[in-house]
Length: 370
Ligand code: SF4
Image (tube, rainbow, N blue to C red; front, side, top):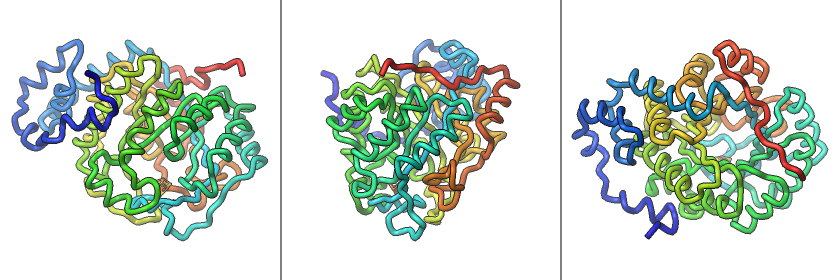
C-alpha cells in the first residue's frame, strides 16, 4: 500500500544508521551501481558515501550523459524577485529572521510592476516570486494579487513563499501560478526544531507536506530541497532525493525538481553545523542526477561563477542570473538582502557563458492561454 504522505514514507528509514551504512560500502559497490540502468534508493545512498568520492570522475561522466539524454544541451534561466521581506519566523540561519533588525519592505502593486518591467527587459519569460513568511504583511491575497500583475509580463510564474493549505494552492493555480519551490531546509526533525524555534515554520510536518499539497492542487512544477550545511549533508541529500523520488512516482503529471543550495553568510551570523566542500556538492549533484535522470536540478548564485560554470556540465538544468535577494532589489538596489550572493552576473552574461559552453539558454518554456 503506497504511503499517504512523505512523512509516512520517510518513517521506514527511522532506524537507518548512516555512518554504519557508509562504513560497509566498497569500491566494487560503487562500480556496480554505476553500470546499472536504474538505481534504487539504497544505491543512491551508496553514491553519497565518502568512498564514492574516489569515483567522482565516473559519476560525473554518467551524470553528464544522463542529463544530455533527458534535457539536451539546454539550460533554463530564471531570476528570483523578492516582493516582501517581513517574516514571522525565527530561522537562526536567515537574514530575514523576525528578530533581525533590517529595513523591511513590502512592495506595492505599482512597485511590483516596475520590478517586473526591469526583469522582463532581460528577455526572461518566467519569474520566481519570493516573500518572507508573514501572514500579516504578505497574506495569500497579497501574493495572488502580485501574481496577477506579474502574469502581464511573464508566461510562467512560480512562488517560493510560506506553506499554503491545499485550497490556497488551488487558488494560486487559478491566479496563474504554475510552479512552487518549498525548501524543507532540514529533513532531520530534531535539528529542524532547534533551527526553527518559533513562528508557523516550526511546524515540521505541515511544511514537509506542502509540496504534496501543491501536487494535489494541480501545480505543473514542484521543486524541493534542503539547505546544505544545517545538518550532516549526506543525510539531508538522501532525504531530499527520496522526497523527489516519492513525489515523482506518485504525481506522474507534475514536473518534480530539486534545488541544491549551500549555506551562505548572512546578517544573522549563523555558522553552518556541517561544512559542505565543493567536492561534496559535485558528489551530491551527480548522485542526484544518476538517481533521478528526469528531474530538473537548480543551482543558485550561492555558488561562485567558476563552480557554476563547472556544474552546468554535470547535471544542472536550471540556473539563475541577474540576481538580487532583497525586496525591490531590481529597482531599489540590494541592501538588506537575505544572504550574500557569490555570482553577480547578469542574465545576458549567463547566456553568454552558456553559448560558449555549447548550451542553448531557455528564457521561456511555457505558455498558457489565460
Ligand atoms: S528562511 Fe524564510 S521563513 Fe526563515 S526567517 Fe528567512 S525568510 Fe523567514
